[in-house]
Image (cartoon, one colour):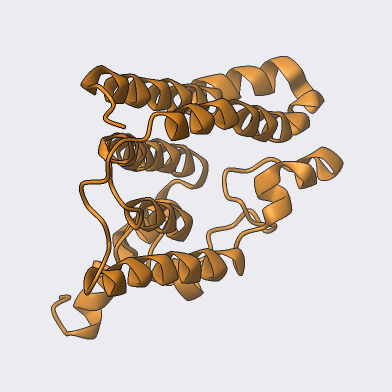
Length: 211
């Protein structure tokens, strides 16, 4: 079935609205206000945020699947190797990242019983530059981008991928703003040493380009 162009625009708008809501809920302005307003009750906010994010994602995904069009690019033939390289690379980044991230902190469960609140999703609340975090600062976000672009493309998928990729980049910049506010020069030093998504800074060191 061929879907009219306005449908693809509506898909992009739906995803944009969803992601904008997602960002607004965890923005510096929102979190600072809610922390001061809710007091000790703020420990429930991360869990509440995740529940809302999942609940509102379901209709967005169902709508997107209902308007899929004709595939114009498929990872077939020799390109299948590239597709599975992206998929495996994404999986390895998720696994490597999970060694450093605290999933209970990420989900918001640990905050409920401990009351601890910090921007980093690990138990220590300190900057960790070991393992994959010494190669790139955001392995989960890189993995997400790789996974989205490993799918076959119709106009709907392309619109979603562009919106999600743009959101990940902008959202990461906003997240790093919060991290600089919390950790100051320590995080700025980490940014100077480690790349955001692609480990080009480490590659420069390995091949002798770094000064």
